Length: 401
Ligand code: FEO
Image (cartoon, rainbow, N blue to C red; front, side, top):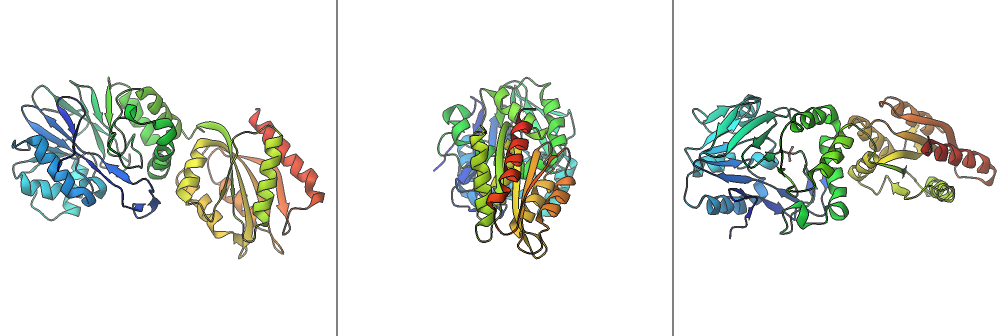
């Protein structure tokens, strides 16, 4: 049975959701599933904008056939060639053999890499500012390299002011019937997943996202149709502002997060005492995460949200505790910048955790490292109260700067 929604009178959502997939990219936990959006535009000519993941092929094909209602498919616009969106290109070519595939030259090359079917005479390569008329609708192509692959473009439909934004403005999370941002409580139920999606998938490419935002600011946009998550049809400035902050590596909030690793509970105990003292000193909404039991994608997302991060780690095999090393490595790989950081270290006979954390964080851009360090020899002691107080004072005053 088809399951489609009207985005406008002429633009139809024909995507679907996978509620069963445990790991997106076989990497990121998605307890709320994920949506793969695809859209059909009906005019004198018909066009489909991106396909979907292989997991929802059957639903997708029924949706496309329902919306086309017996008409041929004239164009297949491929904004992004990652398999979560491009998995049904050949299936559509088989069903609609006269369809022309419209994509950047790089994307067409990737079609050849992923597929074996004959592309001869089936493709239209487009570049920045090219247009394609469907009748009363005109598609304008806007290249968006590295958001989040090099072949990516966005497609702007000027008569209805709709931006098909590829991965940008997407989110983890299946669509449970509601499609539009104004049909869900986005801030309380979706923002966390949108931030985790952005920071982990696109976070590394902040300058490229900034370049696309600059291009988008010259367009009159009423609707944003991303490839994942809700379609945006109001309050666009609010979400664009999030993207602007995230891609400039600016903290979303003045807030503190503590990431701790703990083998037998002693470093955890010190992190908890520190958090409690910070609360007494006036810091609010502190979040504390165990790096062993929290998937690193959640840590990355919290690092994108918060202005202040405390890393607390024991020494392990003359290095950092492995999950802490992995977490800092990931933050560095994703280009996290502009945070205020403090470290707490622990070691029973040879403590190198503090030195190693400082070295790793020192390689990241614009990180303000507080001089104060809380160093434990196995566990936090009463006689370290002064050291503890000094760290609390340093963190509190860094908030007030
Ligand atoms: Fe949702 Fe980069 O693919």
